[in-house]
Image (cartoon, rainbow, N blue to C red):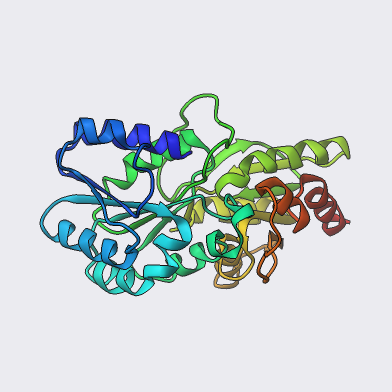
Length: 307
């Protein structure tokens, strides 16, 4: 996904002379073509992410469209106060890109894991939270984000994420994408879990269970219409995310259901990471599988809930 981001931000810089990219000591070679296309509009802010957030705020106040980019935990929790006060409090159009989100850097340990970033970003007033599923969604959402007059957190993967959409879908911020239809359970996937959601759907189908799959690329604001429709149609909704269970996408959906008087409320199963540090070195796939996010394990939990 980071390659898709580099390609798209370069194309956007050619179109928009106000776009400025700031990086936190990362991606220098990745952005060589960007620097050729937009000389003078790339700044390596070094290992000083809080300062990078402040610089981005200043650029936005000057009428520019800054985008900050570095590894997700360093671009969120490390500079949370600056994002809150410098960017969100003033409602500035800064796009904060967290790359390698979730367990993409699983082998580097908890310092590089971001299993709390959605929780942190979505509680900030004025912040929009986007979690694209694949490179296709990433490109489209980045373009959409640049049209917003307010802060955006764009949570992306690292590399090797499969393209789920064969063609660009009609994407809109705040509107979930229907990926596959079903009648027994609704699988709501956020971020790079979408390919696993499709794998779970296939495993359920082999057991006689029909699953709908939706991509909730926008965690804030949630898609009210899609959630209301799912509540009226399904007896079980399962959220899927590579994020801690506390404060993430599943928690946002649980809050949505609890805050409304619906004629029918489905059971909610939140498939997420445990409330624990993951301190053993492993690949992203191994870390997911070891902590309950293997497709087989998720399918079994869904079937138990239906039974």
